[in-house]
Amino acid sequence: MESHGALTSDNRAALWKGRFSEGPDAEAVAFETSIHVDERMALDDIYGSKAHARMLGETGIIPLSEADKIVAGLDSISKDLEEGRLSIDYSAEDIHSFIEGVLTDRIGEPGKKIHTGRSRNDQIALDERLYLRRCIPDLKNRLLTLIDTLASIADFHTGDIMPGFTHMQHAQPVTLAHHLCAWAWMLVRDTERLSDGLKRISLSPLGAGALAGSSLPLNRESAAKDMGFDNVVQNSLDAVSDRDYCIEFASCFALIQMHLSRFCEEIIIWASTEFSFIELSERWSTGSSIMPQKKNPDFAELIRGRTGKVYGSLVALLTMMKGLPLSYNRDMQEDKESLFDSYDTVISCVNVFTKMISSAKWNCDTMSSSCDGGYLNATDIAEYLVKKGMPFRTAHGVAAKAVRIAIEKQRRLEDLDISDFKSCSDLISEDIYSRITKDACVNARNLTGGPSSERVKEQILLLKEFVRQKR
Ligand code: ARG
Figure 1: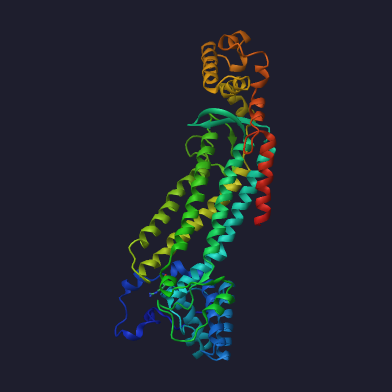
Figure 2: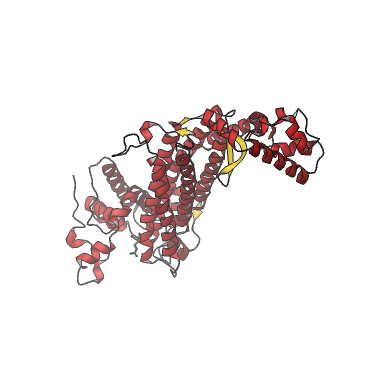
């Protein structure tokens, strides 16, 4: 393993030590260093530096031959990092100083030119954008896999009726497919939000320097084009002090995590003995050290629990930025821990959630028989009467009377005698029975977005099409 000499523990402040007669206090170094966090952007830092070097060569700011040497040196560093021949030196202040140090060790004098016309302030802003551009598509793909998984499960259950809830009380019958699609649509929005964020970060801050650009004839536009950005950030002060994109993505992560957490809450309830709507696979459940019978939904609970720190990261970022005057302030170094931690948490939660849900067993009979207890078809009696010309408010009262009789007789609405119905309204006749079965109630709700199997099949196709297009 190579260790490089430019940045030893005695020489940590290599990039800026010239102005100082004393080295920094060891505790000060430990306090300000960020390499343990920003090391994950090593390849992005190298990618950006290569584009910078090429631009320095093309503009004649440095000789082309030296630009080539820098690029080749940077390539060798990234190869060695990827293949494990070079390890990060944690005594370096940050990833920028580490890479510049290794480069100069390897290629000598030309390495000292890589930082021409550049500051770590525009460099870090660039690295973050490049990192997000590289990693966000992975999260997007995992969300697409989850959407696809939910749509596929839904496809099996367009005829499986379950109670729909409001206030956690039985409301109207829906199907498991309809319910699963509702979750999938939230994830569609999450995916679109990520794509939208990616569009906004496609601007290069490089060339903004420390805050005020450079007197050297840099070509910001060509470097931006080289790196595949749509354009450059238009204001140098804004370029080095903007962290909106961190906050934007952290808020995307918070929304994704909120959706997963709500879904997990439901799974935890559904896995209870009282509900028994779902049975989680043994591979995605845990046991108890004392109660031998236990099979616990810990993974759903952990996902729900980790939502706290994902929200925490968003609040940390918003609060970190709220009082910062222009332009760069060192406070901003703290952005990465929150951004990376929330990203890591969300991506692992999406992954685990997908595995947990795709291996679960759905107890459709239990769901269906659970509809028998809650008068879920009361609204259908009212709508039956509306179809026979009764004003809805009157029909609501008539159906409520039928519910009272059913409660008194301890029967389901569909088991009342015709005389019971007639005592509520003369407009009710024998055909009521065929209108208030679970199936009839679900399939009569045939508007776009409704639970009828025909409509839900359309939703499933739309979800599948979304996944296909975005992949
Ligand atoms: N580690 C710093 C950060 O993440 C990089 C920029 C350092 N700039 C400086 N002027 N000290 O923000």
